[in-house]
Length: 461
Ligand SMILES: Cc1cc2nc3c(=O)[nH]c(=O)nc-3n(C[C@H](O)[C@H](O)[C@H](O)COP(=O)(O)OP(=O)(O)OC[C@H]3O[C@@H](n4cnc5c(N)ncnc54)[C@H](O)[C@@H]3O)c2cc1C
Image 1 (cartoon, rainbow, N blue to C red):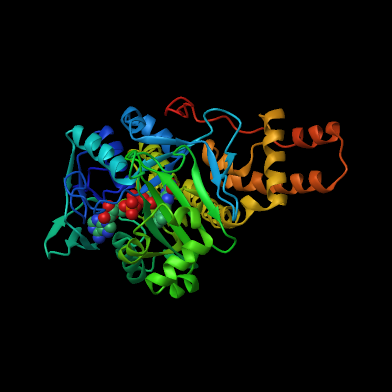
Image 2: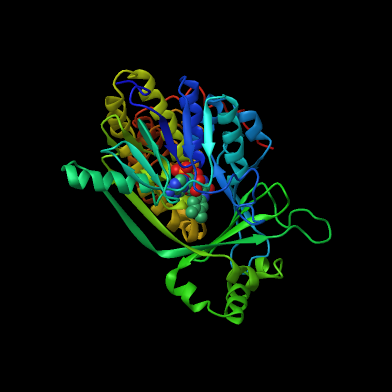
């Protein structure tokens, strides 16, 4: 069966995955209806004045180049050249560059501005109709009907579930699998840590940034950390990640002020309404959702956070989601007459990679909150960067393979494990330069970058 043969092509959820997917499907010549539970973020300020930003890296940039929106995205991104470490008691933060090449930077981008660009582009095809404030409640696969919270229903032929980590499309597919004896599973592993977003406002006198905007700021404190990413308006979105037990102790304004004064004094001094913000803004949970059985024949498929939600410590959830959308587009193009086969091939291709980045994202939390101030970690990181400049075709640090390459995540994870053993051996062993060079040259060559991974796609200064 082809995509249109059953009836309406429907996408549920107009986040980054849903909006990008609708654009890709429209470019294949399909008419698409998106149902989105929230109001149109281009007309209503959904975040109530707060600007929430994300780190965009190579895997997310490639699909944006592919669908032709990269120039608009360039206008709303801020390059971040490295981690700016705010160590305890050190008044001068220290920049740890991400890489040695000019394009090895990540980009701070507003979640809603990026979404607006994708929605505009999708609608501009003339093939995408977005129905906002229409929350799906369930999918009835027997009668090919979508049911909504307002008790209306609409028919569908194929449904793409891009409705995020708490996906109702996924829940309906699980119900369907249970009653029909199909194989499908979804499990969320919650972290014992939560997060809270805060805003570091612009300097009240000058209206400009209070910190260097071209870095990702980290206040690593061992068990917990604060991070900050710049927004074009001169403010920073700041996130506290900490154990649930720490959040429980921050129950009064006095406790919040004392906590920030003790651990993040330089930050606290720049945010006069810190305690108010702390109690106004929600505390969010952090979890990894792994699912299997992402599709039902040629009727439904989940993607983005609905299929693979990961913790945010590698800044990859959206990048992974957008890379997955492009992969699905390619599978649909290679198998236009057998959609069920395209969906199965898509899962076979993407699931091992989603699992690999889920693991690496968990590992990167420890690196960010503790590793970046650990002399042993720093020695290995600097050694890896040095070996990369000497052997650019054979070795690349793990962070760089995830952020600046398009090699499958599973390959990046495997290579990183092998490289970690090699770095440990070099640091603790007694190898001369010739021996080190031959150890590195014995690694398999790094794969080529995707041809669309243009290093000049986004401005780096
Ligand atoms: C604190 C934090 C920081 C992060 N930082 C980064 C980062 O730096 N870089 C990065 O790459 N990723 C980051 N992520 C991850 C990233 O936000 C997600 O992976 C990404 O947004 C997933 O996109 P999506 O479209 O799959 O899901 P979502 O963005 O969640 O979109 C789902 C859409 O579906 C809609 N929806 C939900 N339910 C229904 C329903 N029943 N009916 C209709 N519509 C519905 C929602 O309103 C929403 O618009 C971060 C996540 C968190 C929590």
